[in-house]
Image (cartoon, rainbow, N blue to C red; front, side, top):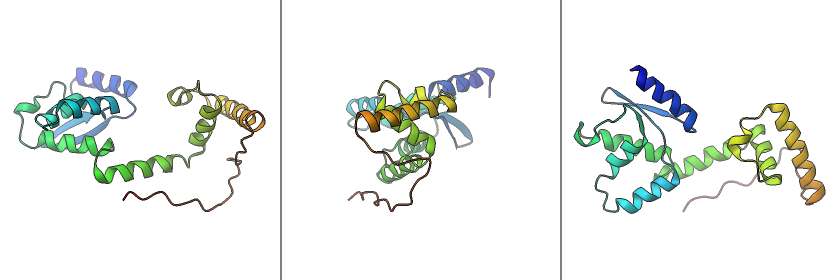
Length: 174
């Protein structure tokens, strides 16, 4: 990997939530996922499917930079695009899988605390809360818990001492 590519990757890790790697035909591709807005634009722009795979792959590929998807080995753009779309939650099986993974993340105490904080104080956004210290998170959570209970009348379970209750099973996609 060249120093320029290393620099691009470092920038990408700062810029995007997640950066992925896949090896196709002995080429390491580092890529990001498309935003929902980008995906919607691509769906409207390439309704006939022509060049869709090449363009999704080009948009999301970080390294190798300026890879020529139009003139590469057959199958590379298709494999990369399929991987990107599955990870982004646009495949038929990936919708359920992505939703289940997101629900599992909500079993983590910090994520529950952030959800309560954002409910009580909508000015706080998820990315901002990830950058605060744990003592500050506890302080904000305690304030949010108090505000929801005392000012809005919302009773919260004590997330520090969870009660084993049977939660309903997730909805099934028919």
